[in-house]
Image 1 (cartoon, rainbow, N blue to C red):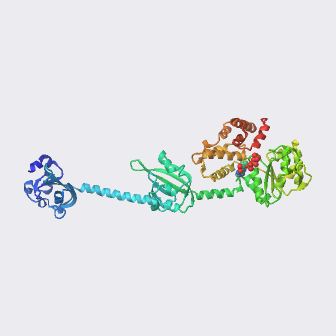
Image 2 (cartoon, rainbow, N blue to C red; image 1 turned 45 degrees about the vertical axis):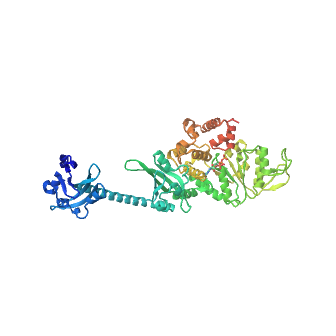
Image 3 (cartoon, protein in one colour; image 1 turned 90 degrees about the horizontal axis):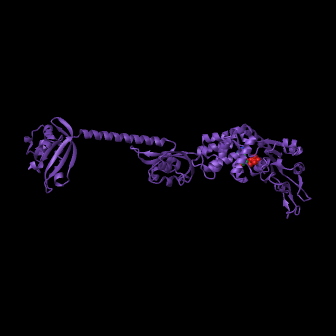
Length: 568
Ligand SMILES: Nc1ncnc2c1ncn2[C@@H]1O[C@H](COP(=O)(O)OP(=O)(O)OP(=O)(O)O)[C@@H](O)[C@H]1O
């Protein structure tokens, strides 16, 4: 019968594993060449004898798979075991396969055994590798947990798969609480809906570094942070998630605030030698009642200096009233300053107090005083000397308890020489003169001013955290004819147009490059400035408001400069 079950005897003998064919009584029907060699037994000696006698395998006594294969119709069964025989031992792997006839009934069983040492070796090596991998992972985890930055990983659905110890400490969430939740649900950052760095990284397959964001901790605390992200890849290089790094920004913030505090006076910022001296002067003069004359080009900060003096003085609880002497025609300016009585001139339908009255007890800031007429200068001199004035059309003499701070961007000594400014008024105003140098002469203030403006704009909703060195180089190289006002406008322009969280060269206004591109004109700054004004005016179709904004000067200053250029 076994000829039917063993049609190819030659192949049976060629097999490298030892093979025993057994009948249903577990008696040997056939034994191949490898089995004969391993068991050191001729086939004739074995045929008809029970297999446990022939093989002498230890598992025959209690683990014999024969019945399981035959009776439970389990099919193939593989077992590994140690075999000691003839004083030699080997690791064996036993395969038991039922042999069936055409009707599917089991008629015999084929047992084949092979040396399992190779398989065992492989298993050992796998085990070792697994142990090493586990140790490696443990080591990485220890490293990750010892990093001060918070680290978390997400899968492709943005669900958290890992949350380091520092991330737990920063946010107040424990890893078990957040695993499986989306990072948006847990971290609630200010950039989740708009600029999520992890989503960006997954989409563009590129890392993101130091994106400015605010996180919300478990207890609702706002946590200023820099967020970075990078891809997570498996051994085949396939992306399976993303890593997020949270760097605490509060220390940077407080250092910046400290630095600004150290180099600022109210809103007035500067760290150059000249600014330091000016701060000293403000401190001294603020405590007195002295009249102050502030001189400086347009946009150098004359008005904020006047405010700083007022708010440091004993008058700070009363009004600070500003009058721009260049923006009004002479007659209107007089009525604006001193007020008028009803019927004093056409259109004076009722009594109106002037700015001196409104500023009573406080400070009046006379901006662009160099643009007043000689007649008005006489009246101002009287207020300064006698603290008295009359309303236009009035007869009653009014008292003025007002501190005067005046400002001009004109050289008043030259105006005195020309006969357009009264010398006696000049000396009355100039009790304490303060001259603010133009920005181009104190470029060391520039980085601090840029930082101040960024913080000011960030207060509306944080977007920018740094200025690239190339952008800073452009800012440092520029001449700033519009001084700090122009710088503030340039930073705002870059702030609004930046899409990267940084102020970079390409986000700066074109006017900074136009001026840099015409170095020949640097020799004649007045011409360069006139050319710039003309270009900007043309670009804005002579719309003075927009042109003044781009130039970084006030409309009054633009109007004055146009007048000087004959462009009225
Ligand atoms: N040192 C400074 N620190 C911070 N901001 C400044 C400083 N100097 C000027 N600025 C800013 O620049 C802008 C112009 O300042 P300000 O109006 O005081 O200049 P100004 O000299 O009075 O100009 P103008 O002569 O055209 O009236 C303001 O927005 C002000 O906040």
